[in-house]
Image 1 (cartoon, rainbow over the protein chains, first blue to last red):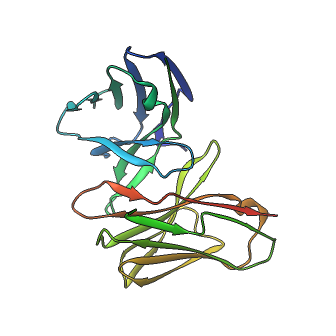
Image 2 (cartoon, chains in turn orange, purple; image 1 turned 180 degrees about the horizontal axis):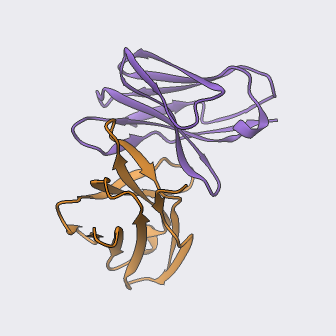
Length: 112
Length: 112
């Protein structure tokens, strides 16, 4: 049973507009979340993270929002650029061993 | 130079063969991980190691074994490869107390 869900397999946006990628989780014990970006033929690369004690974290064009009551987080990319086209994974830190539980990813296409 | 390297990058092997995938890191991290990625299934943890003497099974360890030869090296073995082990394999490292994991470029394994 998927504990971290990315319900949109793909998303297409126009260059310069906002991209919003969503992630839902089922376990209220998750207390730290990360977003990764993955290009074809490369490993995932860390993008941004957020602790459950915060509701927002910003790094340049990337902002992550956390709504604990809804068990929902989102990644906003503003403005979107063609180089942002990649698969984005949401992950949650779980358990005493602090392993990462991964979503299935959302493929973002930013069109020029 | 890449901080996490994996060899080989691509491998085709036959059913029943033993194969080893190797991972090396120059990041000085104690923790290392092996994942596999399959289409539609995201990243699944095979094994992880918190230090040279501490190796743990992940969610899909059956059919795999690992060896942590040194802090910098973590190898994954398929003792008798089968076609459903065809996948993309990633090695990763992390440095507690931070949760971010840093990935190698991946090994594409095909078992015929």
